[in-house]
Length: 184
Image 1: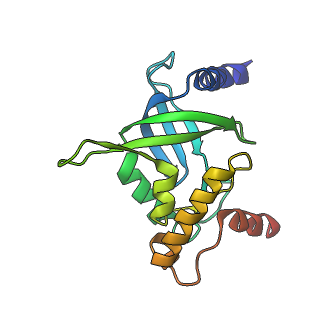
Image 2: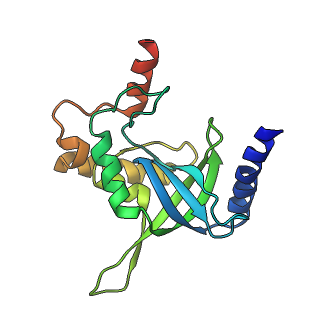
Image 3: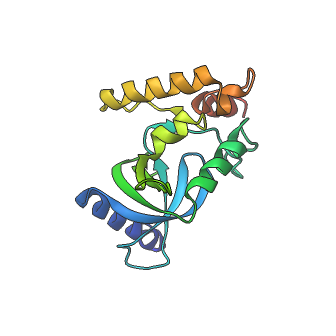
């Protein structure tokens, strides 16, 4: 019964994100480059927050006790960069699906304020891949977006920005997780 009360807010959030395309939310915490704790404006409890994963990217893994025993190279730098960019900010969120851990996987858009121009709203996944803070993650149903993300990643890699500037240390997070699982 206790688990039902824990899952119910997540189900309500998922349904509301499905029903409405873009939802405003405040970024309460950043775990790593692709996992964020968001507080939604339409939540029944004002202090409730939900962990979501960013659609279309895979960021280096940060240590998580009991799951990931140590940081993946470049994970702290990527997480800190994303944290500085969006923590405390209001973002727009579009629900895509729930992952195997039942976390909402969402597109997230943030606003960059430029004093000389009107503010720009940018796709967070595209932005962090362009900065070399994460790999693009192919989403099977969106070949147009995959093609664009592939080009953005190739550009970042060519410029040697972010994790691409780390000599011989750029290991995809899925490979890192697989290596860890086989060593236990």
